[in-house]
Image (cartoon, rainbow, N blue to C red; front, side, top):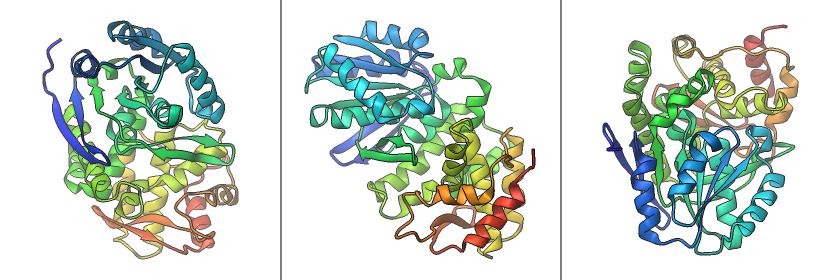
Length: 356
């Protein structure tokens, strides 16, 4: 299949530049070319049980030395137990230090497969092949990989740059509508952090054309990643809404999907920004209109604010127990706010809570 309407971006990583290719046909063209050119001993396509019959087996069959490994679908399986199982699957498939791991799926698969690639035999080659909108615009770019612990999300992980990111937009045709909407939460986040024009576009036109929207969103992340690969500075801006969102995910036992939780988190961050007088009060209303216009939630129910606060205490941005949040002074003007008072956070969470 010839690629059309394809966007070519690049990331300056730790060991050189790697491409981010966005458009229809990436899996059938550039990925296959890369695998053949590099001559890997074995190529493990790690995916989930939903995607395996749709794309996984066909891809593995095309790759020289390819074999398929499928894990259960869902955030609840993004664990060290799954990682341990995958190590065994790689060994059973004949993988060695000259092998390649391809993470074919959404953010959960990309994070898990990437962590496996980073740690199996002290690290083997890795390619991101995102199939969800959320993974295409955010999770597959930047080299952060890892899994969850019972105490919270992404508490075990590594930085592992992929050889490439191949975002084949034809896979979005089978993406459930709810997953597409969840991906849009990360698009809104990136627009708020680094592309006010993208926020205008989402508000006035919506998320089309999708290849352009993905590329614009990815460009925001690439810009921050290149400034701060290990998240010691401005890359942390990409966590806007995520401290709140991760707490909601964890409290719900991951019944809340990541993108939906981040949408509520963006609303909470906006209201906290207004409460702390960091931004114009109208910003929160605008963010709410954009999110609801995209079919995303801006309220939650069923969880006491103090429970969510306790969950936030495990957030990786916090240091010595000091409450740290990414907030906004305006669109395209993120800030890190330290020592946020618990009462302010509780009040914001109360304002977004709908009683069941």
